[in-house]
Image (tube, rainbow, N blue to C red; front, side, top):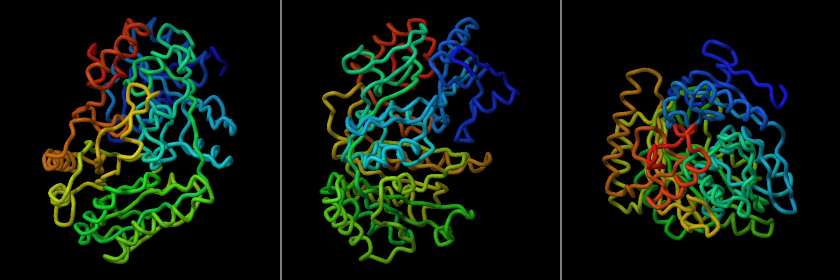
Length: 458
């Protein structure tokens, strides 16, 4: 396929199925037509096709966020796939990443130079969508929101113009793209800053859920003074009996401590190991874990720490940003999610925030930090109407139980459903982003890619 050749596919065609495939099988997308694009020329041609047909334009890569996307009726969906490899500049510590690239490719490319990126918990998540929605990495307390690492963005705006924007080239569009909620163009490549990462201490350890109250209490106390090189998550899991999951984890609910302690240099490894030993020692003194993968290793191992599935699954979930929980919050969390709760959720997680995640980046974009103590996420398998209803009902119960600690804000990259409450921008930021949208997309061709709460126009 050349720069100007492209093939728009209709429902029922093989190319349509490939372009509309999503990771979340519970949230299929059903556009009027779809096309896979790899180059600037193909994006420009696809935009012209959509506009001639009077169709809205939508964009995705892997469909991990399909459950939070607006319906795509009467739209042309563009699926981005990489036009080339990830290119690393080890001196400048910059990675140029073609749109459509998954995080696994960036991790491997950067590791060859002793560098790392603020990637997500799965190697199969698309880079661009994760970054521009904020991005909360297991390096986040040291590196900040992943979107703050973006140094330049190449995109095609709805008028068909190719632009490369940065802090010095159309800085207002560059600002809006970084966390503004989308609807500004079709990204074709992105440049991100990397950071030194010699070694990591990472892994996941599991205990029977009966130990949940004491372990959660100890973890919450530890998070108050935790080193910024450490980012961790406390999870309650009801794992299905499938061959890839160890049987010791599937006999009932378990609690899990997962995370990363970063050592930027080899000289700092002893300190990282000491921090990890301090945290794990607090847990292991309560009881020995039934499974423990924590170890000292290299950064490519971090994309496996969270044990996210790599094959598509049907998932329904929820998300909130929470303030400090304290003893009452811990009890509320475990009452609806811990042992004896009857929770049908496969995973319910408190992800540690703070550190650099809480500090507004002076050079950042529309979303620069998260003012919360924890990110709560939860999800269950939605394999049929009965399980879907059970998961939805329990998510509502959990949301009610955690309401006293709900900040009212959300992290776009963690939003699980289109109909959940969403808010990540102030009213002033929304208006500022909308001003940019009026300039680059006055007709609103990309309006349906904007999530609720991110625009006063749509």
